[in-house]
Image (cartoon, rainbow, N blue to C red; front, side, top):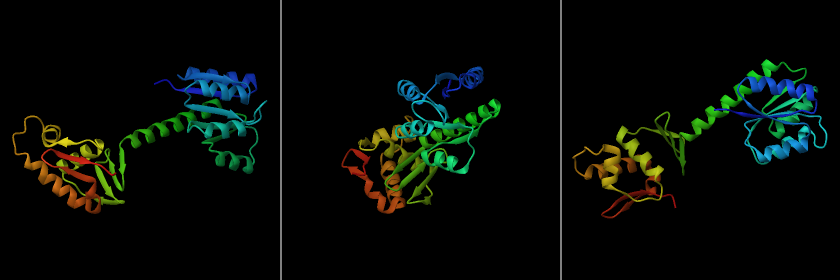
Length: 225
């Protein structure tokens, strides 16, 4: 998937050098020569990475960073010739992800940028696998369940049923639907297997069992309201 970088640098030679290097490495590149232009471009485009100089016309890098951070978690790397600790601390307080001191080694900048973007992508993928509902935390990638941060062991079908209920929060799931989804269409057992597993799940959820509601003569639903 192509990533988009916004290069915000008032020195045209440096801006072009960075832009060419990132374009050659598969990035879509947007350029801005001052802070105001940068914000306008950022508002109009989907950006994955911002390379941001500090000293610029119209709006400096601090102001640009502050405004971007107020509305986005995009990766920001600050480019600067100033290497004092106070500047770097201010940058990190404003939400800068990385600091690169000039003169810039383009290959190092590329490597740092890719590392940060990969880390964000991995975190996003992990978050997609996390379900957190009122103290019940499920990590689908790890196949684990935490109850108020305490790990609870579930049998495979119990786990699958719990996930199915939570992912359909607020919806009434019939016993037939549960059987078809969790046990499969070729299952010929009794509907009571669902009730038995619900009973086991409720016991393990302790005080959280109240979120699994019985819908008489129909089935069950998970609802925290």
